Image (tube, rainbow, N blue to C red; front, side):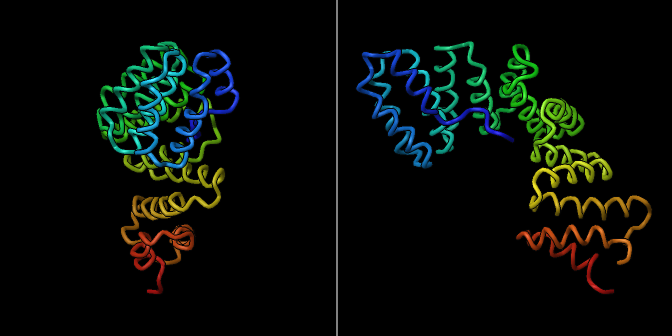
Amino acid sequence: MKPFRYIIIPFLLLFLFQQTHAQAELKTDFEQAVKLLQAKDYLQAEKAFTDLLTKATDDGLKKYCYIYRSMAYNGLANYKNSVADMNKAIALDPADLASYTDRGKAKAFAKDFNSARQDFLFILTKDTTGKQAQAAFYFLGKIAYQQNYFQQSVLYYDKYVALDSTDAEVYFNRGAAKDMLMDAAGSISDYTRAIHYKPNYMEAYANRGVAKINLLSKKGNVIPVKNQTIDACADLKRAKQLGDDTVDDMIFIHCTSK
């Protein structure tokens, strides 16, 4: 999935501090805090944004401090505090749909799936075709999968694909949901699309190989013979070549000489 909330970009920094002359002295500290977050030094980033929040008076600056501190909390697996910070960011700017995406993600990380779903459904009341709609469909698909609602997961990914037909990860995720629905042919098609957009997609090769074996078994070949599994074995061996050791048993059973 393509990222929907980008780490602060230069023109936004410039805009923030042009609009906040009284806070210009915080620009360097803010940039340093963002660099810590980009470097995944989440503990120090959290401390830096906390310090900034004791000094910030401008609502725009405070909003981004809360957003980026929330991301630092996510990195520290402190999802309760992450959600709390996104609540504060939303209170400062309720119209920013990206903040609902960020809060929904934090809730999903905390496995508060029902509450996360509400954030993403809210986004869809405001946006049905833009980047935040894509994010909503993506995460609703993931949440549905986590809750074993596989058909619903497929439907959400269908809506995502209608907006962006080039996302390898979404095809992979939809293929996995179809696997759970025993739709081997459908999953093979999705894994093939994932590989088209990401040629070295190790997991897609592995899953497609297994799906091809399952499709043969579904057609009555409980244990397919070697000359039936050539295509599947090519996928499994490619996955192995790319570094996936989990396919070793499948290769041994279906791809070694009988």
